[in-house]
Amino acid sequence: MDQDVVIVGDWGTSRLRLWLRQGKAVIHRRDGPGVSALTDTPEKTFLDLVGDWREANPARAVMCGMVGSRIGWREAAYAPCPAGVADVADKALSFEADGLPVTLVPGLSCVNPLGGPDVMRGEETQVFGALSLNLALKTGRHLLVLPGTHNKWTVVEDGKVAGFVTAPVGETFALLKQHSTLAAGGGARVDGSAEGFARGLARVAEHGAARLTHLMFETRARQLLDGMSPADAMGYLSGLLVGADVAAARDWFGPMDAVTVIGAGGLCDLYVQALAQAGVQAATVDGDAAVLAGLAAISKSREA
Amino acid sequence: MDQDVVIVGDWGTSRLRLWLRQGKAVIHRRDGPGVSALTDTPEKTFLDLVGDWREANPARAVMCGMVGSRIGWREAAYAPCPAGVADVADKALSFEADGLPVTLVPGLSCVNPLGGPDVMRGEETQVFGALSLNLALKTGRHLLVLPGTHNKWTVVEDGKVAGFVTAPVGETFALLKQHSTLAAGGGARVDGSAEGFARGLARVAEHGAARLTHLMFETRARQLLDGMSPADAMGYLSGLLVGADVAAARDWFGPMDAVTVIGAGGLCDLYVQALAQAGVQAATVDGDAAVLAGLAAISKSREA
Image 1 (cartoon, one colour):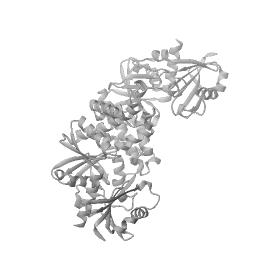
Image 2: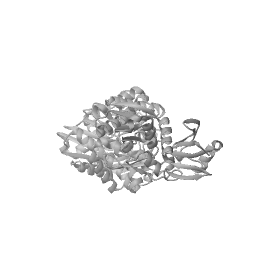
Image 3: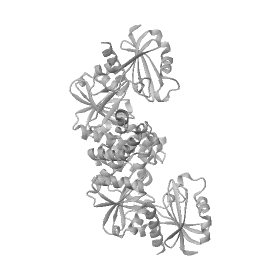
Image 4: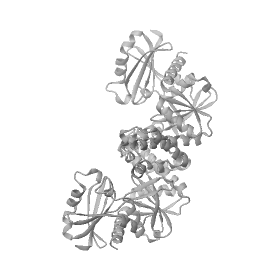
């Protein structure tokens, strides 16, 4: 086996992304089904996808995400916070698949800042990746946010994840857009507009996150009474939900200097805009770059 | 025709309830499909259902609800707030169906106390019914709440609806329960427990309505980490949503003396419990009694 060649992957609920790396270079990338959409066992699915990559003699495969959950391949127990790269590497689950060593990164559990329990799986790898891409984040206290189906507000202290809280903003928005009367005017079939999003942000900024439940129905009433278009209405609803998430986080974390937003371009932009509306500066880190850097850091720590 | 005999109905999105009345007595009750579940035209559906009641020579039919909307039989334009029984009766839409005079009660529109637009259809009739069942509500300022798919917080001033705000609490809960990862542990198939509901209420009371987005995911985390049962988890989620709705309303309306809760038993009880948690007393009015009393009041006002 070539110790310099590794397979790394992010295997989530809805998709699998695999990369074949040699040193710091990515040689190939391949996509597959998420763990909730498998038509075969995780092992068979994985081995089929990486079949021809085995010719490069990879030393091992390291993967993060829901693959390490109860609904995944095997369960890697959560590492409790505070947790750094070394803690996660220590708790990783290793086994062999057709002779290839496979390591599954554990998720993190914590008592969130509101005193309740919380969990993440996959995002911890992106957080550690962001820390290795931006060394300034490795010392002191920083707030990072990973927007998505389950948005994760994450506090890092001296290179360790101190705690986090999950806001199911993306999931709630998707359900309301697909199924609710708020989208009955045709919203399910259109993308939210930027103008609608900005109006939603402004509206929740005006009244505060506590009023979210009482502002949401305006999405429908504005279509019925004011002729708001479905695209503007869906943007408006998104702006209300994201704006309330950011406003609540701002109150909760106190004054923020700058927030690091990790993820794909479009979604990051919405959070950057919402943070700006709340008077907070933001820096962005590409989600793919973060996951690759994080898997490299965990893999390296495991070797050490 | 017998002026003393009337058909009254509440024809909503998901169900139709019809009553044949003689004076103050209900002679028959019959149920049918909501306007979103029709297999025939509204006219044909209605005439088929009331066919044999025509032998009693009813003078007219008066119906409220979505039957008067764009997706109903014919559209009865919203009456703007402030609006009393006479205003609603004036704006009602009348026509004939197979020789029977039919009147559709209009909904109400308003600028809500947050300065946004809002609408209701059907609930106005229950509100006017509650006022005719409890004369103490006819003078002064009162807050009424009608829990449901779209919860309506309604302010009545000297017998008129001054304004209202809609919180889509029931719809949001149903979507999360049916489709979200918060219910992935089996929540979709069980009823929420009373114990879980009380815990959710207490949790949101502790942290405030602004934290709702950041508390919701605990529904999942408590199942994963603390072994919370699906029934307790669904109760917990319901408690969070209802608790946040009540807490926000309380801040918004200022100190409340007592709130009138209108609706079916089980749902009313949840709101009474949430209001008690917020230190507010509540009185309840049965939803069926309210709609019958409201239709009678509107019908009478139209005759006058």
